[in-house]
Amino acid sequence: MLFAKKSKGFCVEIGEHSTLIARLSEPNAPYVVEELKELPSSDDEALTAWTKLTDGKGATGYAHATCGIYPAKRIVRRHTLDLKRMKDPAYFNEVYTQQFRIEPDKYAVRVLNPDDGSDYDQTKGTQKEALFCGLPADDVITFQDKLLAQGVYPERLELGTLATLGGVVSYLKFKQSKTPVLLLEIGEETTQSFILSAEGVDISRPIPSGIAAMIPVVQKELGLKDEESAKKLFYSNTFDFTSMGGVLVKKLLKELQSSIGFYEVQTGQSIGHVFCTQLPASLAWLSTTMAGSLGVPPLKAEMVPWLESQNIKLSDGVTLGPSEERWFGLFSLLVSHQNAVPDEKK
Image (tube, rainbow, N blue to C red):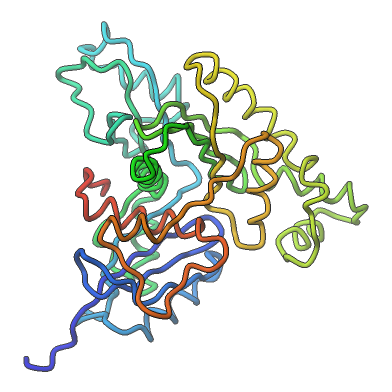
């Protein structure tokens, strides 16, 4: 067919708060980003409406996309292995149940090397450190079904956290940075925290405290009648919470300080920057608050030069807006896709 519609490339990141989309000139690198879009993750209709109207879906009517997801019960954990037990078939299941508190038969798990993201060779079993990455098997099906219903065909389905970790390591290498970064994915109930450097992932720790833990503090500090109104106000971006920021992050801070202290004693290195991804635009100030409370600057990523080094250009008229870092996870998916990091499709 002479005039067949040319299909574009798409990349979709579904976070807890926001869904970010990139429409690309081509399905494969080098990419030119033709459109960037942000939608609330809670609004199922918004993504459906966007895919219906978007250009470049190709013959199937679906936007064929690389997709990053952040299931609430995901695990991305660095763990020190007992090499003497590597030949024991029950050993990894013990790690899952005792260390990560998950039921192995209900999870899709992949074991990687924490320095470069390559597959961990269990048969050799010579590496003491491994990065366990997984999500509930049911979540894979739920996300796939939901995406298809919204007009998106997931060519690849990756754990967004994993792509982001790879992206930060790539960025630190690009900047020739020697200082470690504290990466935080602050979710509703849980905060995933990582310390990483240009050499890979050094420490990972889930902290059972997130945005939900800040709501009662907001209610108390402002004397509001219930938590629901506190939550509405907190997310609304109509009130400046920065003055009470220190009180809001106090619980989270305490947990983080013990991780950082342990890391600094073990390695003799200090954290250089804090990088918060996955925050909705209305809570972007939390990033500055966390950094200020820890006494280190937030990472201000220079996205465009890094993207260009990865064969990704922005089309004329496409901008990242004031807090460029919000797009970091989305672009990390593209970087990992074209550099053929092991496929995380479970």
